[in-house]
Image (cartoon, one colour):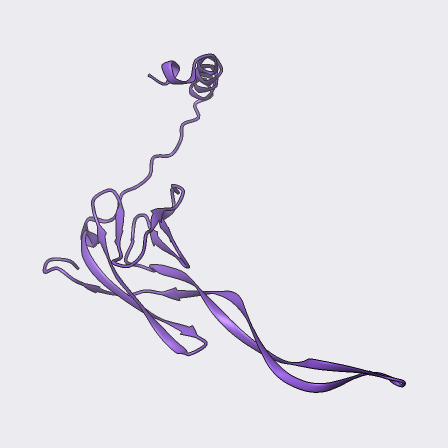
Length: 161
């Protein structure tokens, strides 16, 4: 089936597969989440922001072979597959769950805007002795900063541990 899709590249792909098999090399198979972790969970995490704290909230489901992130107000997509865990990329945030123990240390990295204020001259005056500021004001600029937070997890469905 792969050969039909890749055409001429199928021969080199097949050769590489045979070389790996001949050398005894095999790709490690991903492990599944622990059976005791299977269930639906709510999560929350306070995230520092310029206006105090915002509360990051959502739900995720641990199934026998994956973790499914359930957020109402965000369009998230799975991160590239990893043997270590499951990740999701969302606008302004990313989430990470360990593959075999997704409840052990689930984390989120969230982008927050940090304000920075500085004094700037609004009006200059040229004189014989040089340039002088006639009117000062304050300007606010923002920079993005990533904050990594641990998710506080609670079972949402009876039977979830």
